[in-house]
Image 1 (cartoon, one colour):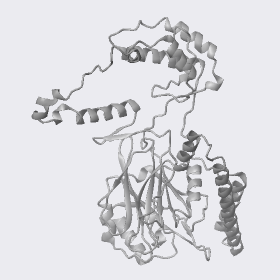
Image 2 (tube, rainbow, N blue to C red; image 1 turned 90 degrees about the horizontal axis):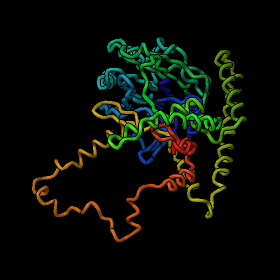
Image 3 (spheres, helix red, strand yellow; image 1 turned 60 degrees about the horizontal axis):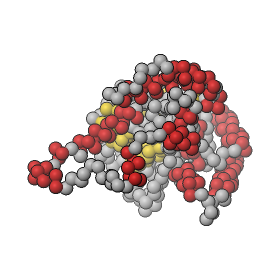
Image 4 (cartoon, rainbow, N blue to C red; image 1 turned 135 degrees about the vertical axis):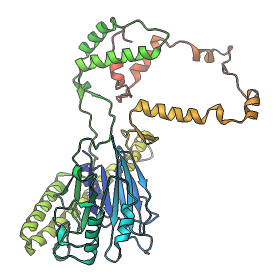
Amino acid sequence: MLNIIQWNLNGFYSKFEKLQLLTKDYTPTIICLQETNLTNSNKPSLSHYNIYKKNRNICDRASGGVAIFVSQECPSEEIYITTDLEAIAVSITLLHNKITICNLYLPNQKNFTLTDLENITHQLQQSFIIVGDFNSHSINWGSYKTDTRGKIIEELLTQDNLVLLNTSQPTRINPSNGKFSAIDLSISNTALVHKLAWKLLPDIYSSDHILIQIDFTDPSNKYVLYYPPKWKVKEANWNLFNSLTENNISTLKPPSKDNIDDDVNQFTNLITITAKMSIGIAKNKPKRPRVPWWNDEIKISIINKNKSFKKYQNTHDPNDFIQLKRYRAHTRFLVKLSKTASWNAYTSSLDTQTDPSLVWSKIKSLKGTNLQSNIQLLSNSELITTPKEVVNSIGKFFQKNSSTSNYDDEFLTNCHRYKSPLNTIDPNDTTQILINSPITMKELEMVLRNNKSKSPGPDGIPYILIQNLPPNGI
């Protein structure tokens, strides 16, 4: 399900391990962060997410700032808005429409007017959501008072036909006195509000703000993902697969020299249908991001911390608040200890004799390289998602750029002087002659025997299915 999480985390790097837990537990499509405390020299990253950020540049230290992280599976692009406020907007391309997510941070020391906020809303697309830490109080969204900043937000909601998603629940707990307040707001325009569900998450991380999740309840608001089938090869009945394939091949039309694509599709469909009958397809859903330092002790500590937070929400007892702070401190200690041990274990196997493939594998893992990410294109405002359409679109683009229509007449008149002969094989060199010789059955069997790849291509057929074909299939 498409969902958004908003959070004032007060420091990206200091709360990075909490972000890792957040992505593991909730796999959000979009994460909107306030008070990232980044400088222009920082290059933050989060595995499997694209980042869009706006830093505070009027301060001599790292403070403030906003960022939006969007899943790499979801097509997105930044919408550049003109404003003096700390705000950033991103357009998300869904199956049937586009939506804009705007992330805003209004610190207490920053004064703003109704015109400042309306300037932002007028630059957003038709369907949009504005989330952020507004530091504005009003009894309409759960505060005990209404201040000047809150009145400006109320006027914005009234004049621009916007809808507040909050449910009057507090979104912040003061770390010094334990008092609750509601200053993190989620606002949508009327075109989108009926498709959204707003809620506070039960987990409390090491920030004074509580996480907010916004779910898209309309099933039409989704992005298209392509995952090739994952076969249950560990449970495969290869004898049945072999015999069924052998019998079915006799029903195929003889290969023709006119249209090789038809022959390939015919044989591919036969393998796929036979594999479904004899092997079966497993559910192939994207895996949750892995947190290598996670362990049962941290899990229990987090459960106790969340229970104590829930208890304090109900009792407002100072003793319960003290107990909550103890659990939070204990959890931070366990996470730090486990991260150190995990890092030492991860790097201890590397030395000057380590296989370079293992070294690069670990480097890619540290960088968060997603080998399963899908390539998606936006061409003439149309979303292209399937591998075949993506390849054809890129091919047409390069074909157009390489076309002779781009050359001037003088070059076209004289280009024959610079053309190389197409056939550069030396007929007297036996090793070169072999390049154009037909593939033999022995060569094919050798390649299949030595191939250990388990990943299917766009046709969904891994090599292990080809390796188990009967002789007439080969």
